[in-house]
Image (cartoon, rainbow over all chains, first blue to last red; front, side, top):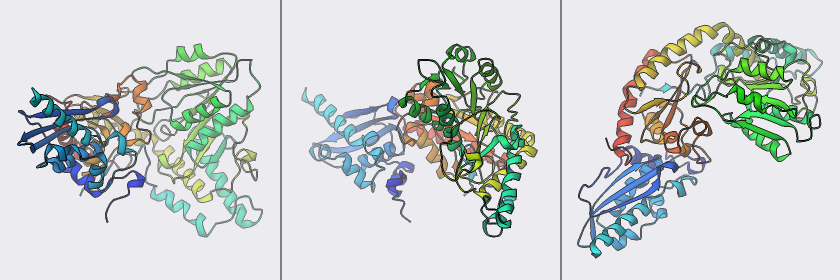
Length: 132
Length: 389
């Protein structure tokens, strides 16, 4: 049975899968862009690292302190971003991430669904660095 | 997969003997305990026998026990009921309640509700272990104070409050003392007379009884207003048809708890102490609450740089059931008020985890948790940008 009891605050199977088997977890030491969002006081802090070649994201990794939703959305954004152009990747929204995970409990939509923001921060960081 | 339940503070399984005691009252002895015929009288007898059993566990008289639908209702009834009786009896500044910052929401939210109706409430701070400071309590009592409501033991961190001292202070000042003993019964022997307790809330499902039944002890002579009106059951204090099977089960659970209380506490403590000792071997792990003045079955930890909901659900994935005070698992998205009150910062509070042991907990269960937990903590720390070791 698919566990999509989003209304009752439970997580979808896909969320649990990404939480328990996070994709692209870790750091990129020589990252071209790094974005951090969130605040440990709220219980969520995530950092996204990207490698960029010819305007495309060739590698992406994350590190996250936070709840199940925070970890799963971080993992999902790395999958969504990999191979995309910077412009395409910038257009990924929080809703895209949540939809790809078969939804998130409503209460988690705002607090823990920060991965798209972290990715945009990483892209901004890359663009700021390469401007010079 | 191995399954380990270590969330007995949340609820307990119903004891087999309790189920057996309850069974006749569903379909055989189903009368309404308020009815005058033999069906009703049989149910009535069963309710009254249970009342005595609950009273015995508390050192009370049977007529001082009122059945309710659980701990939350008992807390509401005690505090609102006493507040409504004392509305006009005190000085000019408004009737006054003293409670603590770490009470269960059943008490805190009831007090907040009464504040909106003009009652004054003092929420006493606690020290780093979660103890109410009795000097501060005494200093807060004024001529307007009619009630002190301090929990017997905290449901999250397990800290046992200085109930005897609080009872003494309240009595000396002529103030009623209510205590939420939902977590304490069955683990700590309670004597309402010795402790000068005037009102005390208990719940059945925390002591291997059925859910949906509890009781409020009300000392003889203490007048409270009912909060549930109707057919006048329980001497008019709590109307509603008797939940005979539930009450019978609760009575049986109390009887068993009284027999086992010492054995149980020793069993919990032995396993719990081993759990604490070995969990604290994990780097940057800490025990919340007091090392010894805590419920025998409670172990409450925090781990730097990880978040409690993630920890809890990774344990769940390994078959282990625990609880967390993390904001992310609460409906309000705020870190536990108890952990904040003992001085943890929100980030620390998010990384907390409660194990609560019970009669069914075995040495093997503790070993299994000790096998699994360090790896999960390590795994989450590897993911965490806050962990740079």
